[in-house]
Image (cartoon, rainbow, N blue to C red):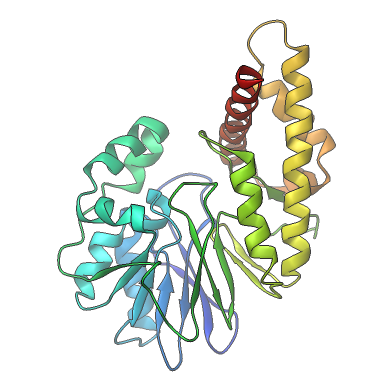
Length: 305
């Protein structure tokens, strides 16, 4: 299947990739920035590597100056070995903790299969980066690209502030377009989740007062700072609701029932009912995983109190 190409502005293009998974349409994406320098932000999973390469070729981009990785979860970086081999001189920019996994991705792949199961297998195994220089964000310097350390969704998460927008990966949550215009913004807080770390990262992003946010999932938001504030407030709302459900639980927390309450009470999830059934199923899976992240965090707080 082909990637879908959507030119957002003269320099910014959204490339939507087609993973072989039901309900994953308009979810996995790569950002392409062109002009005096050409670079991509994230590369998607291995299963869509050829679709990404075809899209870049279709756009008549001969060379990439950089490949920027927000983090190394396989839906964002699984194709890195394939893409790097096609552009063997292009530097790859990532968090310092990610570098060893790009050179030897076996543990990353095994952990992905353990966590995601068949979804990881559909994304495809990760090939190592062989020839390309891999540069830590701590060492990376460019006048028009500034890296920001934003752990929380993962310990190796970074964001990139550029004139085209703030590329947040999943540090600002997941935002999906809904035809009715209703909001759909959710946390991306898989275990192990530490709320204080996530909040600090959001504060880092908010300090940039971004006008445009470019999400890993999915698309742009023109009211960037407002969306980050909304997401920060949403994290506190989820914490309070999940904590309340844990207190009420007589045994193990019913994750599904907890999610139903969040869907009923969180105004930023209002657009969920407008999503296609297949997409709702996907989103339920990821939201339940985010609830588990909160549960682990809250239980850690209780154990240490």
